[in-house]
Length: 448
Image (cartoon, rainbow, N blue to C red; front, side):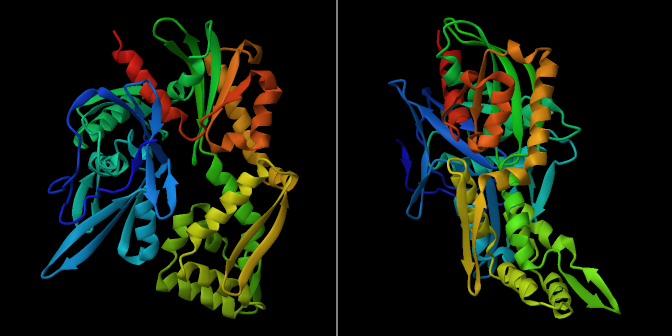
């Protein structure tokens, strides 16, 4: 396993890529890397000279992470008479943001804007950045100090995000971002092709495969024809995607178990009338960082005024405490942990504590499945849509390959078992299969 012990972020004085010092290895097109640049998480895999794949890990405190959060954090620092713009990427960006969210600018979900002509650049602390520059800065953080001159195979979705997405434009910008990051040899492959590529190499005959790729924010389903020969041939047949995945499931747990303890559904009394506590106070839980955006005097005053007019102000004042103390990320970590436990156990306990506020709430798997029932129906409809676009019936799918953390959820797996049969379902490398598949695709494309 390759390990990264330093983080060469662009620290100090640079409005874009200029003036940054990075530590890069020499040009070596024989070294192949696959980069899964994701909306929520990104992964880098290397293919060694011995043909073995290793996923880059990132030392963060006592942990070694093999996924890198797709986040940039910018802040401005005073140095004598001048101010300098600084940034961090991945888990280091999360840590910086949580340390002082009011004075930081967080950039997330960059991938979703790639195919949108309406987004070209943004101002960060008075400096203009193009989307390609932002992604290039992130890629240098993901690179963690080496390999910029290696041959890279980057993943792209079959269809980029957005109703007005221009797929050709999205790929061109993706290539441009990699070029600005310093990569000299760039190839692009479809993410679902990469997700199923390692699995497909076990095939001994042509097969029609449904690949389910579950991310943090989206779920993508692709029907592909894999033909194993000297070089694996892949033919995309159909595709469908939906903006429901792991983050949505986390939110259902919070909405059911946490928000009611913080005042959701309560009433407050004003001008002789009982009114519901504004539901927008709890919309911030849809994404952990949105709770931080509520940490401003106007919003906190408004919540306190409602709390003062409530028969039981304790719950809303606990919400204020969570916002002020920046506990959105820690809460989501607890929720994600209990969701993961429910993937292999019938019962789990959600535990979270802060000061006098504590949750120790048992959850049965059947309860969780009832909370995500509507999400499951929409996912099921999207699976069927992928087959419709491919012009195939369920029985014409030879194999199903599932990847991504949400594929572990038993109710999600049951959707595929009901349609295709449990015996057709395979998985593996749920968090790193796309990056590893991209490295293998790069090898095969460069092979004589």
